Image (cartoon, rainbow, N blue to C red; front, side, top):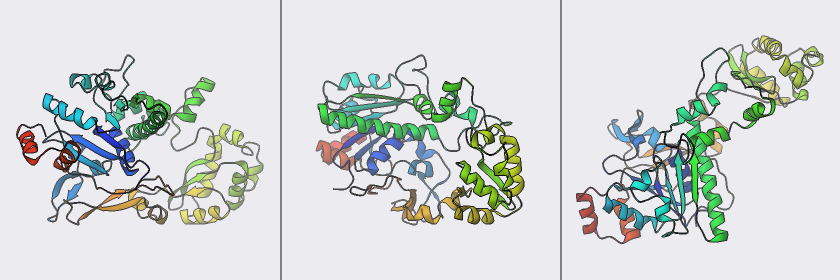
Length: 405
């Protein structure tokens, strides 16, 4: 046995990011993910480059870095669900699956007779999950939804960026990613409920809901006070000093979490009087006087190099850290020791392997397993149709000739 979800099978009719992120998590945990792709086209993200994996001649292949990032531990099957014969094959495959997840527009699955209402009586144990921009209900339900739109509508852009700058999105498609994570949690909850009741259920996930859901303490600032939070750049709304600060040769992160840490910082900076100043003695006072506090802190930190502050403050238990670029992240000894960069074989890569981001979940008894690299489009079509539906080579060839697979 490998992975706690071994024995579960997922019919994965998702593409782009939120759905594939969810199913990669489930696949890393041992589930058999049957990734359904359009014949001759595949997942849209296969074309989202450069960069692409290089072949042995150093030329671009059809595998983009974007696609590789969220499609590990899946088997790719090409299947045209817009055709009746493809829909029949889909139903036969769904019959052998525990979970069906899709991220088409509201109503599209009904056109293909693959909606929950069509399937729930035939497959009462099926867990059916839909991911859309705005959910299945509400005034925006029929709108197309994208990460960027959800970041804007869901408030995160209004509090990201410098106070005197424009609203700024997060540097990765964080709403898609968080939606994928929330969705994997919802599916695991539905699996536990099925374990108790014997019945599946419908899961309705949306990008906007997920974005609002992780506003967390900033959302509660508004709900509690009625004051609309504003952009603070790298500063924290409720803790000071807690930001990127200047050094003589760059920047570093200073994350003072309590008054004792502030006293230690002031002493190390040669300014113990700051900790006794009524403007800065307590965190609420520092928050109230944040402009003056940061001016003094930066004036002190910019006189010494980053290494000086990192080494000295770390010894005193004052939280500090570097501002790494992505290259530095994947060279960091802590990141590497924790297995956050993994290498897997890939048939199209000239080097024979591709580097991927590891799964952060660490389980002592049933760890994640990197069994399958991100598949090429339709790589496992014949394998899956033979294994699950017992089709013969001739039958598969006929389906391929008709453009069904």
